Length: 239
Image (cartoon, rainbow, N blue to C red; front, side, top):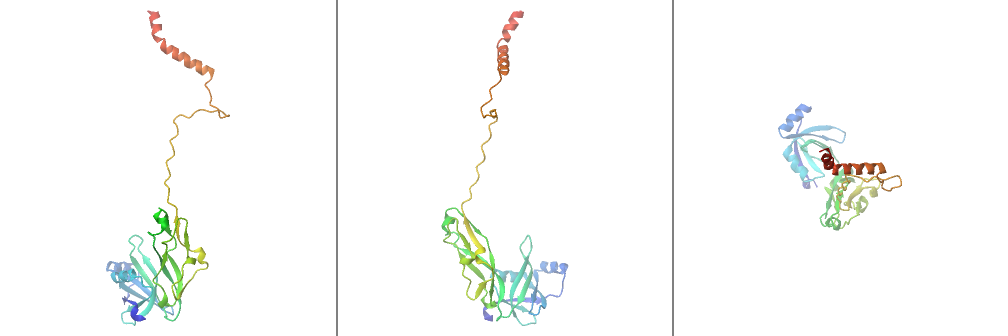
């Protein structure tokens, strides 16, 4: 029923171009456009605060009231966001007929994450698919689809095939089994640093046996040692 829908009050936009859009945003306004059944585009502007409040409520279908015109039922087709701040910088709406089914993107939310046995054991739960396309009458489009993951254990995967579409809607996908909603992986193990290599590696031959010093090297080492010990005797002889 129309009385159950939120209403977004907007005003007609008469200035266009990037410079005009920047000026509107500085004044706290967001530019937008609504497309009619015949493809007619009607530009508008809306207070950023009002738009933020409405979007936060998650309405899938709403009434758009352009000053001087009757309110029309619309769905939000696209939101353009600022790449850094995340603010909505442009809004695209589509006028719909309440007796004709349409396709719409619906957010997927997970519930019971903290209760999942795998999460309690330290597993990592990843939310893979965050929205899905559904087909339904505008009045039957769900605001969100909630998936219960409270029973997931490590190694589990939840696909769209295990999710029941909300009443009056169907999922627009080729193979629900191919759509992964969430996975629960084992705990991530931090890699231990590799042991430091010994400063001096033992020399080995082709057969894998340690290489012994050559006789000449041993003799040279011995002579060096004797020469060091007898240094004092040579000086006594000279005296």
